[in-house]
Image (tube, rainbow, N blue to C red; front, side):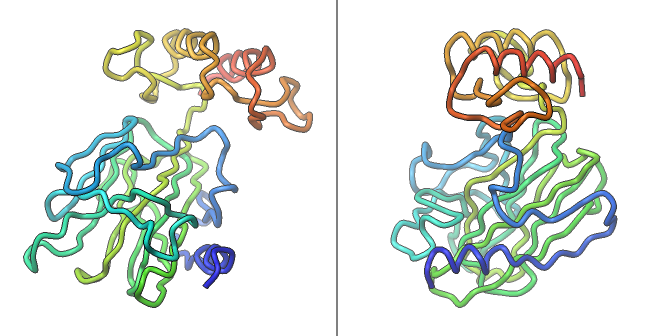
Amino acid sequence: MTPSSTRAVGSAILFAIASPALAEPIASPSAMSPHGLTVDFESQPFGPVASPLTIAGLTFTASGGDLSIYSVTQWAANGTFVEGATLRPAIGSSSNPHTDIEITLPAPAREVGLGWFDPNFSGNELRVFGTGASPLETLAVPSFPAGGCCAAFVGIRRAEGDIVRVVAHVSSPSDFYSIDNVRITFACPPDLTAGAIAGQPGFGVPNGILSNDDFFYYLTIFSQANPAADLTTGAIPGQPGYGVPNGVINNEDFFYYLTIFSMGC
């Protein structure tokens, strides 16, 4: 199967939804907000890692024990929705089979999505939660023949921006899987940080609260020409490129951030 056909099939998500007015499936990473956070695992060493694992404010936990960083470079699915280093439950024995991976968010989100490597059984699901114990929404992950041919993308958008926890639920303990390129769009776009002091806990991690710390954090990354400061092509609402990064950091980005900051959450 070619990467393009993998993408097409992988995006054909069966969608079980309890509140149609509040949510919609996302078929592709390109359909998500360009201002979201993307977490991959390329900076992690291959092999077992302790659970929980926190990267960029996202906390990953395996329901059955530890986690493991796994390379998919030898499989045909590499370069589709997953690439290089991926995250899976650590597999030690029959008493430690493939189990769920839970992702706890540092602040509420309105969009979540991830790549799912080699789903082979029906019943695999992406579940998103609010503050309660029951899922807000459940998305079924398409299944493929075993052998690493394919990967799926599963994503969801909720207008209320109330997602605080995500679970990659695996239906069979023998289903070899991993996740990659976890994408999160937080509910409050100008909320960028918990604090404005570099090196302190929470720096660069949204916390669901909009304050002057967020404004001064943006000033910092703007002055450093940090790629994260690239927010828009132009600063005039309604014009083409508004809210779409263009690889250039200039005054348009600064005034765009001023606009969304003044609008609040």
